[in-house]
Length: 120
Image (tube, rainbow, N blue to C red):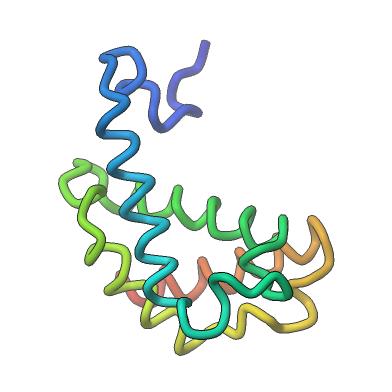
């Protein structure tokens, strides 16, 4: 089995589920804090759709890879500092981000482009 495809594999085999929870909780709380005003609990928002979830989970992998030594993954501000800038640059509700798998890909590509600009 190629464990490099499974980013949480080491946590899993080391029975570190508590760390997994802290990592994912920090990411989703950051999303909630950044998009809380108009998107988070709005059932019409792309954040509540499969395409939005898919795009932001792909973006999580970029955060994970960026923090290659995993020292900041449980820190909500690690995510917020970047997400707040992405929010200002990417309209997640654009029509091209609302069409199923193609929409998820379009949205992720936009998010990723801005993520890469921010971290450089």
